[in-house]
Length: 341
Image 1 (cartoon, one colour):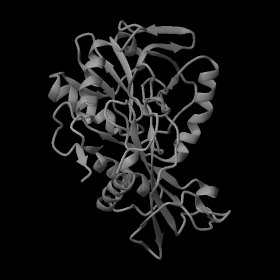
Image 2: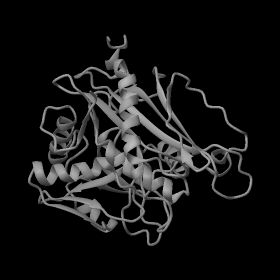
Image 3: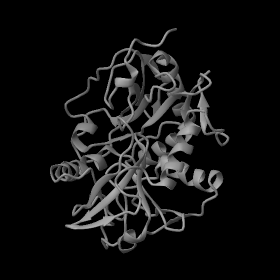
């Protein structure tokens, strides 16, 4: 089969309907075998659990064409683990982890012509998600659920390269200490929308959320984890029970330690110490790493020595190494790349 006739280098980060998606339903206490379908529309009751009480969880990952022509998915087993945990927290029946990975691979295989060619800067974004589908009017978990996976080609998150951004310390709280900040639930992202719109209106690219209990410790942004580089070249990343366990961040920690020989710390990071770091970045599936040049704390600026022109040197090494692994230019740790046969 031939690649789709798409101007791959002009793709943005948006949705484009592809050929097939996977659908499985949970009913009478069990998941069915699931089917692949070309139908992208969903029909449900006006009283469906997801519409009334926001019972929904999701994941995001990417498939790549490597330098040697293979199509690979980056660490889908960790997405399976995280979605399993997310479902449990919202009293949803977890989709089996092995079937999750199998279904993800099947969706990529069915849409193989939509996988952007190596060197285009584009990738195939994969979105598994689950929601309560039967009518629920009393406040309780749904009895029936639907699990779906679609894929869509997307361009690079940053056209023309990643330039350092300016972010602000938010006055809003992202997650309570014993809330749902550690899972990938749609409701978490809904809560962040007002804050990000306000930040954009004020000229900032993102928010830095502090812990809700004391407002002294760095947590994350609305959709990415933080990484910091110390002046003696150590990688530091915040640790908290209300931070989403980013797969990209965990991968960066391994890259820093095993590929670049850096010392790595995952610990509580107090906002007071942020001014002393040499570099700062936001990490996640979409952009891999977004460099941060400045943080605005209610009018007071923290400017990192790495500057506003380009990624800091250590952040750049981390970015180049991780993307090199994803694209097959650098040998990957065992199990990191799931090859589509």
